[in-house]
Image 1 (spheres, rainbow, N blue to C red):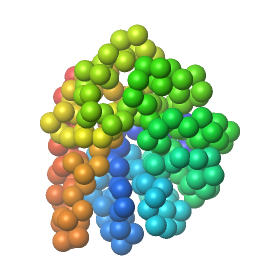
Image 2 (cartoon, rainbow, N blue to C red; image 1 turned 135 degrees about the vertical axis):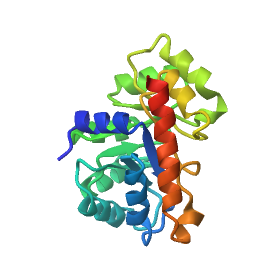
Image 3 (cartoon, one colour; image 1 turned 90 degrees about the vertical axis):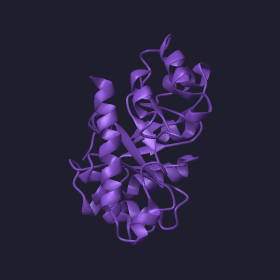
Length: 216
């Protein structure tokens, strides 16, 4: 059983949370294997994926707590949060700030990362009990915006998501991000459909190398 602290440390050590939006159930395990092989251990499925509860349960059964932390994103209400937690989700992510989701996750001891864009939203979410604040969409304002939020609010852990790639992931880490969320720039679904999972592993390694360099 993951504690919030364990999950937070796992996401930070991973440096990257892989956002699998609309992933095919048939390739889920192989894509996750490929990401883990590349050093990415934070795996986020999206709540709008058909059969999401079964997919979370399958991941939970296929990988140990030490291998990956399983998250569900695009969670907009407490009912969805509760459902995915019962299926085995270790963390819950939202694109926006929903205090009922934060309350539900805290009630059951699950790490929660709501979406924010402004310093006001960041402090509101943190005061409401968020463990990690997802700066989204990060690409709209870039690493400088994240760094500006960290200036007066250095105690608030941030995870930029949206438009993060190997080209800018290091800039976000240097600006103060705990980790980054990455979707299309990390997971090549066309390669997965061809059975080319090595491409995903190589991209994961590239992300990890950039982030490790930024942390040294």
